[in-house]
Amino acid sequence: MLVSGFPGSRSLWAALGGSALFLLLALRWLRRRSVRRAILSARERRGRALHRMEETVCRLSAQHPVDDPESILSLSLNELSQKLNDGSLSPEMVLHCFMGKALEVNGELNCVVDYLSECEEQLAELRHQKTKGPLYGIPISVKENYSCEGHDSTLGLLKRVNLPASTDSVIVQVLKRKGAVPFVKTNVPQSLLNYDCSNPLYGQTLNPLNHKKTPGGSSGGEGALIAGGGSILGIGSDIGGSIRFPSVFCGLCGFKPTGNRLSKKGIVSSSPGQKSVTPMSGPIARDVDSLVLFMRSLLCEDMFDLDSTVPPLPFNEEVYSSARPLRIGYYETDGFTMATPSMRRAVLQTKALLEDAGHKLVPFTPPSMETAVFGLTLKGLLADGGSTFLDNFKGDLVDPNLKSQVTTYALSSHLKSLLSFIVKPVFPRLAAVLQYSQEMRSVKTLWKHHIEVETYRQEFIELWKKQKLDAVLCPILGPALTIGYPGKLSTAVSYAILYNLVDFPAGVVPVTKVTKEDEEALKNYEGHYKDFWDKLLKKGMSDGVGLPVAVQCVALPWQEEQCLRLMKEVETVTQRKAR
Image (cartoon, rainbow, N blue to C red):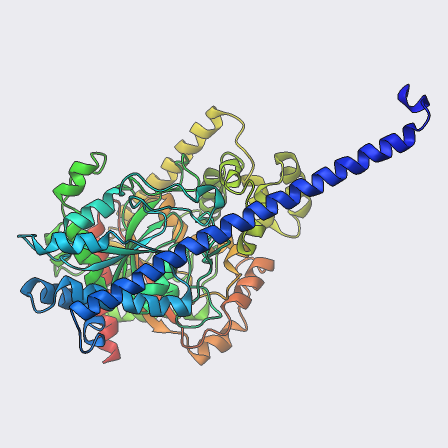
């Protein structure tokens, strides 16, 4: 007020205000330019890496010619392993065939983000390797969040550019010791917490079966590359379906073990520290035999020595190879995300085939799904109100596929609480998301939540054992959604994320494809809640005729071999029917 009495004070304040606005706009422009430069730098570096990969293909193909690369690319993993072990194929021949195909697939689908040039040195080491094994000379693709010495794990985030790993993750180390050859890193959705596959650094990855559909996520680059033929075996990670969704959407087999059956040391997360929902690492491949070969090879002394937190449990051949008829629980829908016609048909068709093969199938209902999804899973993942997740985006662009998530999580707890109250009568599920994404107010509340999660897990196990089940057969979300829909449908992950919450091994096997009859029946789909998200799911899954549909197989914790056995049974009876 005193200053306002001086002559010219209004013009002074106007000038100051104009200067402040100019400074603000200038800072915003500088930040955007900095972001654009960082993105350009990351893309140029990828370009250089892929160019070196092309040069290596030319050199190796000249030194180790292959008349018909397709004769190698079309082999199963077991067949390829046998030929590498008996010497009829060399690691150099196999590697340049898959590298060449990976470059071709990447040109179409945009799924490879880095070339692991150290694989060239590894080839020289393999020549002197006296003992061979099932993974000897096998090219392996690696999800981008696995640490590889000298390479970034960006998660599609600017803040992680130019932060090369100082050492390989334990799984990559074990693979190399077994003679496998990691050769590329593959694309992921920004921050990983999404089941589409795009980010501002490297762009959108496409589904090889339909370019309008997502390949899934967060291991989407793996799904696209393997389904496109550019890799025969890949490693992903899974905190809510991130191995299983790409496998389903791309017509592959994928397996998520119990949380600590395989090492997670050196795998980068965007939300480290949360303990309610268990992340896992695991394989993606064309068939169940490949998943079994991977698990059999990695459950070894090398991994147990490199990571002492992994229990020293070798692969149980007796359980996997058993011919004893199984008692299998099944359900057609989980009571939360209504199964689409093709999902329901896949389960019922597989149930009938398993019964014909001599197995006993009995109805099973997962307990309290709404509590599991909202009160346990969502509340645990966002116990900090989403602040750790949101920290990833400071000074960064937000990928369009994540804007819905980021906007919701960024609301204050007070505003979330108010909006939850307002929308509850008309949109109860949105109200629940707003309610359970609020920050927990004390450590005591967090500890209480951990107790609730463990209580639910024990209730689930007790129900399972009461019915004397060996395994469970159930739906998994599919077919592939249209690009852009996963970010708006985070609640549709219920079939997958349930088994991260209870920490059970789970895998997926493709069993059928969407028919015209399925597509027609989808027009009458309303969902359990008949709300906006049910309508959106129907729209996102439309135009899916011909796309693969899978079933999910589940076993109790630490019974990976039982889960894989059911997966193999499902694959066998499905293929027998197709013949």
